[in-house]
Amino acid sequence: MVTEVVKHLEDNYKAIKDEYISVVLGIGTQTDMSLAKPKVNRPLEPDYDVNLRGGEHASDSLHTGIWDWHSYILNGEVKPKFADSCPNTASILNDIDQHLFYSASKDSHNPFGFTFFSTLHGKSFIKPHTGPMNLRLRIHLPLIVPSNTKPDAYSMKPKTKCGIRVGDQIREWKEGKAVVLDDSYEHEVWNETEEMRVILLVDIWHPDVRREERSRIGRMFKYALDQGWMKSSKS
Image 1 (cartoon, rainbow, N blue to C red):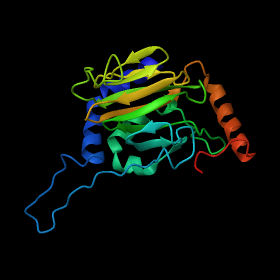
Image 2: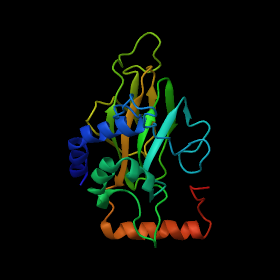
Image 3: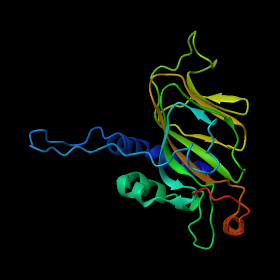
Image 4: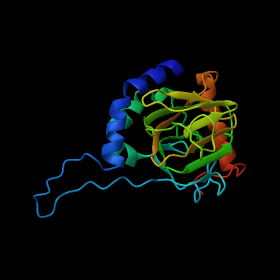
């Protein structure tokens, strides 16, 4: 399953990157500047503030710098605005819908499912933290990686100026080559460069969770939310 999803994402990396550049950044769109009122596509606004919203990512101390999200799945719910703005990427993700870590049923809920463009700007850091459970695997599909990540005398990290540490393993991203991790292990991310790092982050079900268990887990989460045992990530 994981190999299938990774291959699908890597095979479609160029199309996803092109749509990110065109829609999210607003670069490369067709504009006729000879018109009296030329039409210029505005960059897509981020949709999640990790310091203001609730949920597992919300903490004043979690990150420093600028970390932008453009979400397809946010707190377990598909966001129609993303599909409208990025139809190619949404279609590519819909092809692996059965593997995505969210609940498609009205009778269940999965507040821990995310899929989004993650833009970590230069001089920004996501501090060591752990995910809330090991029911999911997290895939990073790198779309834009800083050009020079070789450490220098000012670097705080020994191997790369832009990378991720999971447990005791350090990796740097390579465009179009997916990284798969279990984020229930302690992990941190850094970008010491002046350039932005962009990935498509995709949460999928851990392959050890059987299909019949998935709906039960979703019903369990929904019941806990309805009973007030869990704080809603929307609050």
